[in-house]
Length: 152
Image (cartoon, rainbow, N blue to C red; front, side, top):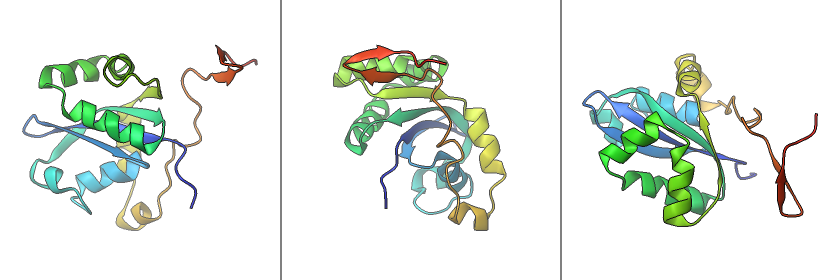
């Protein structure tokens, strides 16, 4: 099986006001699991999910993705609230604290939540990420070490 081309890092807001940070290769299915208390959702089973506060699509190896997830988990509540209000700030935080420059794209949580509402138990098992083929908001490519905007 081919490894995913990207991962999702997300922050959920729970009914008690707490935040849960996680990562997934398929955010729609994972959010559905959190909502329905399915497989491996111990924290959100007792702290019911209210919404996806923020999510990012990340084009990086799993090791970097895990480090970024841990970085967010270790952040103070105030800093998490800042990341939710200004999602572009995560890239700056990663550069400053981890000294890495992954492709990190903020994504509209409302789109993910609406896709998850349409899932059922049967469709969740065989579900593929509906956003996997969408282009980045700011597409770019590397050519001889220089970033340039694509033509056309």
